[in-house]
Image (cartoon, rainbow, N blue to C red):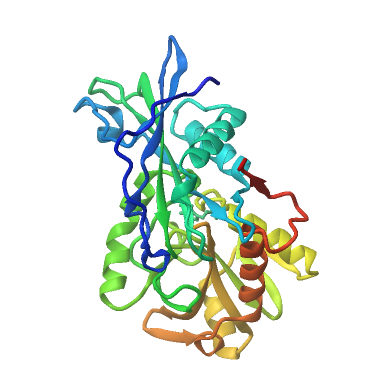
Amino acid sequence: MNISVETSRLPMPKPEDDSKLGFGKVFTDHMFLMDYDAAENWHDPRIVPFQGITLHPAATALHYGQEIFEGMKAYRGVDGKLRLFRPDENAKRLNASAERLCMPTIPVEDQLQVYRAIADMEREWAPSRIGTALYLRPTMIGTGQEIGVHPSSRYLFFVICCSVGSYFKGGLTPVDIYVEDKYVRAVRGGLGVAKTGGNYAASLKASHEASSSGYAQVLWLDGVERRYIEEVGAMNIMFIIDGKLVTPELSGSILPGITRKSVIELARDMGLTVEERKVDIDEVMQAGRDGRLTEAFGTGTAAVISPVGSLLYKGEEVVINNRAIGSFAQQFYDEIVGMQFGKVADKHGWTVELQQ
Ligand SMILES: *Cc1c(COP(=O)(O)O)cnc(C)c1O
């Protein structure tokens, strides 16, 4: 792919204090764009100064939700090098989401070229403190200009970037979780497997109600029986029960997280027994009462590992590990963050170094 580059003539000042970066508020100087239509396929790949986009008011994304996205980070290592973490997995997942929503795929190699190119271009925006990163948000939207329910005839793929700090204000501090038994996020056969905005639209009300009662995140149960655990907020969820790592299987309504996959591989390397299966909320609450639930944590690119301090389900609270960070959570965090920041040898070949 031949990516044209137009450099910004008005570069923005970079944030001075890495410790004050929030999440998703500081955008960089440039963005990537590429268009699709049936006749020309993907065309006109370009890096341009960061700017607004113009849409026809009938654009399919606005009316029928044809929108998918990815989230990945470029980390500035202790050696000064920038690294992406398993970007090929993000590229494959974008294509899987695209197929589910009847949108065109983009060859994995082309996506990787785009992610490298934009991260290289914006390298000066990558902060260096551990926990910070240059966040890449690849997004695809249907831009077809007609009202009528069918897949769009045109698409826009873009990548915007942010300088980000840690996702949760508290970093690796355990969070209190509300087990949601009224609203559901996704059902098997629906869009839960795809990284699409609609899943988030479905989640906002529950998250809002939980956060007004002081809960950081919502733990979703399955949409049919409201009994089997699915995931937490924008993360997959894992438990240590009787010394084994237990996590919900990819049932068709859960997003297949890359951090989830990585933690499972690391756990197996460590000789930990991993069970990917249906996980009943009653089993977890009982294990909590019995003291057999020794850890729970969320996994996702945003926070890597987010320990769970307590679960509230139908008015009963179970406190996990005295609201302290568990040793497995800490080990997985150290291992993954170590690879991302070039401090720990990458035995799996998960990191992709960018040119200097
Ligand atoms: C992105 C996302 C995750 C985490 O996936 P990672 O690849 O680990 O970042 C989990 N659940 C949902 C709903 C997501 O959108």
